[in-house]
Amino acid sequence: MTEPRRSDCAICMAEDVEQIRKCLETGSETPDCDCDGQGEPPLLKASRLGRVSVSQVLLEFGAQIDAPCREDSSTALIAAVAGGHLELAQLLIQRGADLNRQRKDGKFALMLAVEAKSFELMKLLLQTKGVKMGLTDIRGKSLLSYAIDANCLKTAQLLIEHGADVNGPYDRARPLLPVSMYMDGREEIFHALLNAGADVNAMDNNGRTALEVAVIKGNREAVKELLQAGSDANRIDSLMDTTCLIEVAVRGFKDIFHDLLTHGARIDLANATGAPELLKELTLLDKDLERMDYSGDTALSNAVKNGHFHAVKVLVEAGAKIGHVNKDGLSCVQIADRNGHTEIKTYLMEKAAEPLEPKELSEQLSEAMERAGFTSERARLQIGLALVLEEMAREMWLDQRHMCGSYAEGWANNIRQVNGTVGKGSDVDWTLLASDGQKFHFEGMCKCADPAGGYCRLEEGHVVVPDA
Image (cartoon, rainbow, N blue to C red; front, side, top):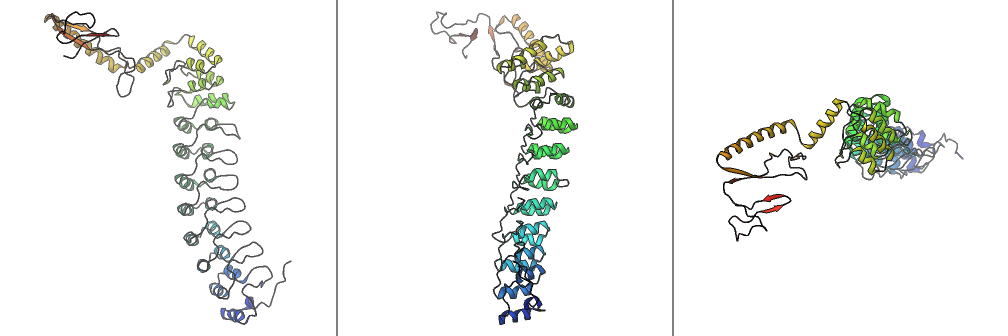
């Protein structure tokens, strides 16, 4: 039961500090009396009003520094910070006030300073040993939540510098990073959280990450930053049963579409969500259907591998090449066969059997030859080498010298590696120039004892000549 308000409280009625001191010295009043019947101790009231000298006297006579208000559980420090009274807050902290005492709504001194953007009070509290950075209010909101609400980059940076958890909650349902992207005008705070290591794949209560929010909002710069930081471009939104690629197809964000593809987003996943019709829109956005991932797979070979028949048909109809071979040397038909996708295999074989247009056939032949190393630059080099060998043969014939072994200039050598080394299985021979009458002694066939120059031997159809 609430006590009736006292109208004769000497402390309340005192007009100066000395009168209050006299009341306390004589014992007519106590420093913790409920002078107004509202459960608000004198020290708390003095702190709320910013009366430093009165607070000093009350503390001198033993006032309980953390005595709470009956109504909302505020303490003197909470009241001083809420009122923006820096000097009084310093006094209370010096006297040992509890920095982390929370009101009924869960807010504590530092949270109130953040909410009010009171930088001097924030610095004072953050520099005091023992302040807890991970406290949340009754709604689950953290210190950084209030920095986002206030749209104050300076506050966010200050909190992060002092150890605020960038992966903490915005509230009970959402992490900080997706919210900072969702709320308009918070780009700088978003960057601060991202640069401080916020989890880019943290999901809100709707199952969305910061990347999905950025895609929906068409924020390309944020999309690129999140992808570079490791956001999953292929995650399926459990709430909307969609992917980032489908979202950009619906909204027509062509640039973002290409950014997603560059970071491994898979076109064929559109079919996994039961939306093959959107795949057609994706193919219109991306004319380069032969773009390969790290495994050398295209959108079509990925769709084949995962058994997405509708995606396969859409991509083939859009012009994707059935004959593409990935880094494992597997064509789309072989991938379908290896993964047991019989229906897809049959479809691809039927499509592959259809007559090709001359231009398409020429493109496929050109691609196959280039992949094997038969480039125009190499052709010019080999022609020049052949002419040199031909001239050498004429000169040697006149000199009664002969060529023994392979006469080839190396055209069949398959250079597949980027560093110029030969491909596995390539046949590389050396040509031996021999003078007239020179003899070769074959190991196992020659009866000469210890022939000069040693024995030659046959290995896989080739003559191996010993070093001179």
